Image 1 (cartoon, rainbow, N blue to C red):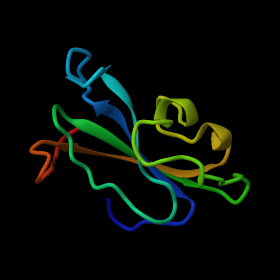
Image 2: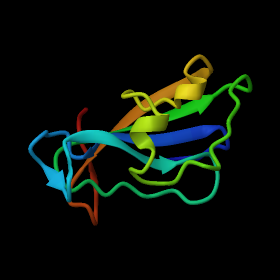
Image 3: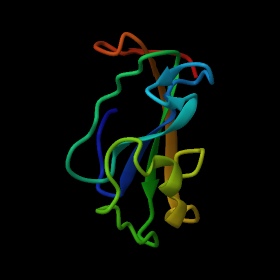
Image 4: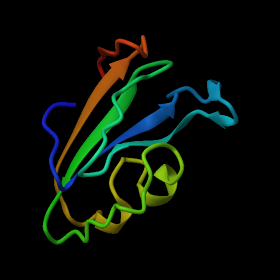
Length: 114
């Protein structure tokens, strides 16, 4: 994902797949998968299907950047983030946003055109 920053989130807005008919367990079609929350671990991209859109968002100091309660993964991705991968509580405090795309194989993701 490149250089990571403290006031940054990275969200795959097309997980587990950009296609409605592709499922992982009971989760089908595009949902938000949280990869990074400004500190600690960053889940590397590992798209199982299609070209996934990863949204890297940097927030201004006006954002109350409290992400400690949000887990990496699907658990609160749709609840805490917009469909565009922005932290809902900081939607008015976006300093910069960039989308990068990757496709399978999951073990060696390749960039693809969004």
